[in-house]
Amino acid sequence: MIEVKNLNKSFGAKQILKGISAVFEPGKCNLIIGASGSGKTVLMKSIVGLIPVNNGSIIYNHDTDFLNIDDAGRKELRKQIGMLFQGSALFDSLTVEKNVIFPLNMFTNMTFKEKMSRVNECLERVNLKEANKLYPNELSGGMKKRVGIARAIVMNPKYLFCDEPNSGLDPQTSIVIDKLIKDITDDYKITTIVNTHDMNSVMEIGDYVLFLYKGEKFWEGSRNEIMNATNQQLNDFIFAGRFFREIKEQNTKRLSEEKNK
Amino acid sequence: MVEIGVGSVGIVVIVSVFLGAVVTVQTAYQLTTPLISKSIIGSIAANSIILELAPTVTVLILAGKIGSNIASELGTMRISEQIDALEIMGVHSSAYLVLPKILASTLMIPLLVIISAFLSIYAGMWVGEFTGAVTKEDFMTGAIQYWIPFMANFALIKATTFGFIISSVSSYYGYYTEGGALEVGRSATRAVVVCCVLILLFDYILAQLLL
Figure 1 (cartoon, each protein chain N blue to C red):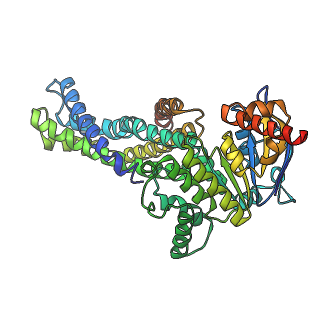
Figure 2 (cartoon, rainbow over the protein chains, first blue to last red; figure 1 turned 180 degrees about the vertical axis):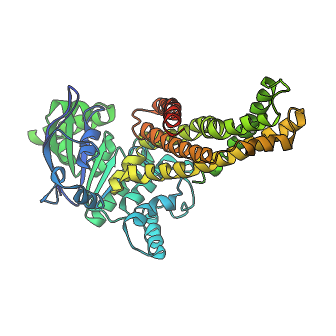
Figure 3 (cartoon, helix red, strand yellow; figure 1 turned 120 degrees about the vertical axis):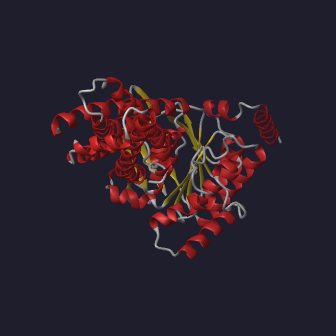
């Protein structure tokens, strides 16, 4: 579990995060949604310690305050974190196999055979069995994301962070990536936090949804609650497209008819 | 080590051969009086090569190649979040990425300077022979006659210092790149310019302190 309390972050005079508090529970896909510039990526990078915050607290697993632990403790905690970056962040000079084995080489005493077995298991998990010897520049966008996921889960993390996992992907590949993230979360019972503004992802995997608007928490709930939410900014964001607006209208009409009956 | 050392041998060979040839021809051009022995050409050329041309001019060329390479590599890693990925894994990214570059550069650049000095002297000797400015024997007699062993130490001290400057300055500019592709280019350019200025500055400081 990750609990964020009253998190504030400013860049110069501009306040990006304004007193954000949220609880991200294990075994759930926790989604942070919001328009571009709403502070999603800053929040995620603050939670993993890539961006220092001004004040607030970030509690991992009930008792570890991430902002008040020493370097050694932070390093240990980070071994339990896997992260999929927006651009995948694969190491260009390494093959797929070497990218995935990298954390194992750095932090485990496993034999080469054991490491390769784990690498192949992870690549198989993301449906990339034949890509071991390819370099990142030989992969498609969806394949890069899958390798990124394989690398993120190779150390059996307790926490998985995904920053815009569907950016630049076609709808079909996006669904594959969403399903993969959901399955991994369910299978390993890990705490997953996903940054997205893809409404399909929200509807497919959003067990818990946190909506940010101009750096503030404006709404939180599940994907089922989102259809009936009354928050104006959330509705403007979610139902900006005609497809979702029509679904919302049909839903409202249905509820109204049921009420009249 | 391979990238910085072996990868730079080609440019070092080209630069060194031409430096040696030019310094011999130009020295011979200035020494027209029959009162001065021809062997002085060898002495001036060899001393200039060992004291200044091999450790400074060659390294200035290497600053362009190695410096821009390091800065753009680290800059690209920064903007494509590869450095963030290392940090998330719990890897100390600056130690993991920068330290090997500093070690490789500090070790390999003195070796490249030694190669450069030998090649330049031999190129100067052969060009003197071919152009008739000075015979091989006279050139080598002059080079050996006025040889001071400390010059080699001085050249190596300079090369080691410059190797450290190139790798550390370039790594700094690359590692702290912010923005996109344009900023990677700017970081590389800044790294090379600052390296060149610092090399020239330390060239003077070391000469003043050690000679």
